[in-house]
Amino acid sequence: MAVKKSTATTVKAETVVATQAAPVAVAPVEVKTGAAEVKATVASSPVVEKLQETVADVQKSVSEIVSKLTKTQTEVSTNMDKVIKGAEEFVAFGQANVEAFMKSSQILASGLQDLGKHVAATAQAQYDEAVANAKALTSVKSVKEAFDLQTSLAKAGFEKALAETGKLTDASVKLAEQVSAPIAARVTVAVEKFGKAA
Image 1: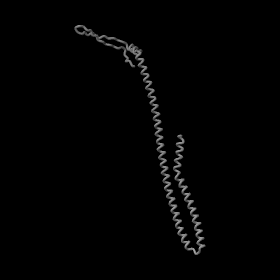
Image 2 (image 1 turned 45 degrees about the vertical axis):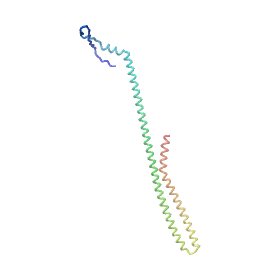
Image 3 (image 1 turned 180 degrees about the vertical axis):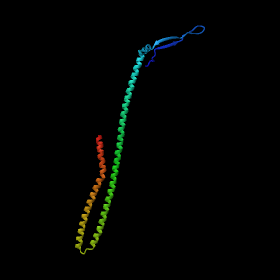
Image 4 (image 1 turned 60 degrees about the horizontal axis):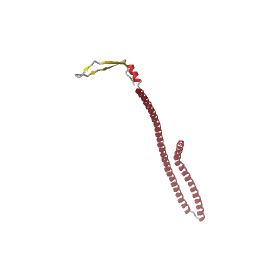
């Protein structure tokens, strides 16, 4: 508590004396007290000491509260940053998964189209060969020649069918590998990312 410094304090007082007739004014009286005496009296007062202790306690409490609020704010800010980063990573991860499935679907559609073209070309070739075989059979002159021609045609047809089945199987396996590659890559990323977190 601050005390105004001055060398002396002047107190003026008017004394009024009451009489029966009328009040009479008396000249002002000056009382001089030194500032040091007032300051010493105020400083040694138990009320002032208690007030100073209370102010010190309040300052200490406010300081602790400010410190705790600052710490809490820092922790909340850090945790929010982590939550936001986690949400962003989750969204990016999900988006990459969708992109992988879309790429896989595109590869599958393109591959099935290519397989369909291959099957159609094979079917056309078999039809053309069957027409040629029928013409060849109509031009035979004996049963033995027909039997021999039919045997050789059946053997050639079986070998071609076996070769075409092998080609179709290889193309299907290759297509399955291409279709599963983007999804397998995402599974690998998921295992790495979530295996680390666990």
